[in-house]
Length: 230
Image (cartoon, rainbow, N blue to C red):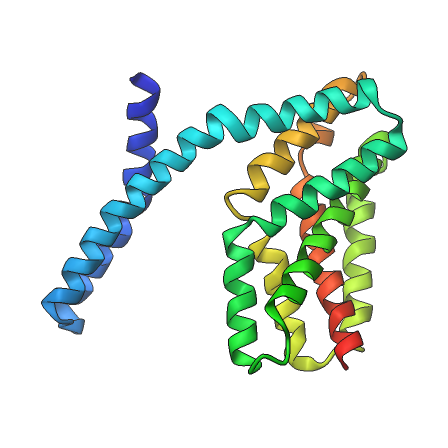
């Protein structure tokens, strides 16, 4: 109960300021219909309930299983299989990410169907999967994360000159939406699990940063998709 109360307090602290701000605007500047305000309040309660359930679910399922997989793979599989498995895990988890599907729907809507949502989701997911594999490879080889990030963003900068201008912001948004509530807990715990087995590594130094690398992958993949569509 102590943990449940702590998570409830965190959820209230996260949502309550937004509710208060909207109510202040409502009574000072907006004057929205009462029905809209009631819907907002009811929706806010549902959001808090959903966040509470998600945080509890992530704590008892996503985080432990991700860390367990990351710890077991290096002990039982060749390193090449670990990289392939990491890629597949990153791909599948990203395809389940709600934020990615929202982005794909909006892009499909704005482009009039010219950019198919399924193709965009697959491109983003594949970018994350490959980037997660590269992040695991970085941990194994002990490469400084700054070098990997610098190389990744140099590649992004170069590709941006060859991509249709309207797709450049979409590509960067694709990098942002992959840091969602499903992808982050699973991939982060996967990286920490791998670090815990690859002896002598520091979890703080090597386990974290995997999301930063993973967010570059979809930017590159969507830009490559833009070059193909061009």
